[in-house]
Image (tube, rainbow, N blue to C red; front, top):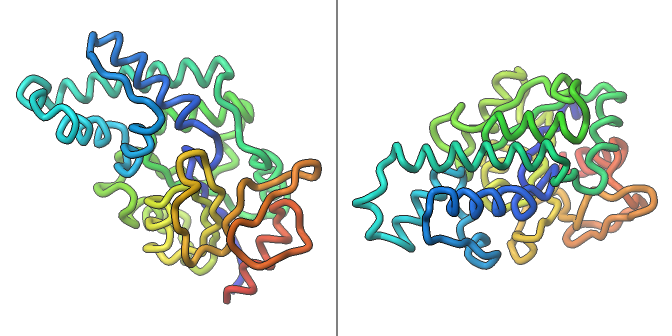
Length: 253
């Protein structure tokens, strides 16, 4: 059995969308709806333990503003989240969110080497499309064979459902792929689906434990910007390449 595909998370993994995009869009939306809410970095870091924007809003109301449960319906939460998505997409389209170090290079190298690509994320398909086209061009989505996004599965991360969905659509075994994640809930989702996982830490996940990851890095690295190994075996490589991934894959067999 050999490595055949790479499956990427989006938020925090492909791009620093959480602070640069989602947090800002949430706060702008709250103002538009005349809600006396403001999520700072510390609060948002806690809220990221809940996967999915609508679910995060419901969790915030339930745990931080329980009196509002009488005033805000499920429909209201959906309306707030839809507006937040609209604002996020505008910010991304305006170039306010960029890919993380090494992401574009690795995607191009993977495609050129014949590896298949998939996406497994809890963010909406609109958000994925906006990010990919604004950073990689209109044809970017064609590089990904399957995009598992949003509410396409019943249970979001940390459940394994989204990864199992992508594996099923690609007709692949978990043993033929490597997943890329940045968060604890994403890592739990990937590993529960049986996937070997590379973790690139983000602003909100630096203190998390990723026991069992193939390697934990600060980012994917580039020729002029080498990665730092946070957890894992030393290597001669200074950035994540297809060659390095195949070495990690073989070492973990």
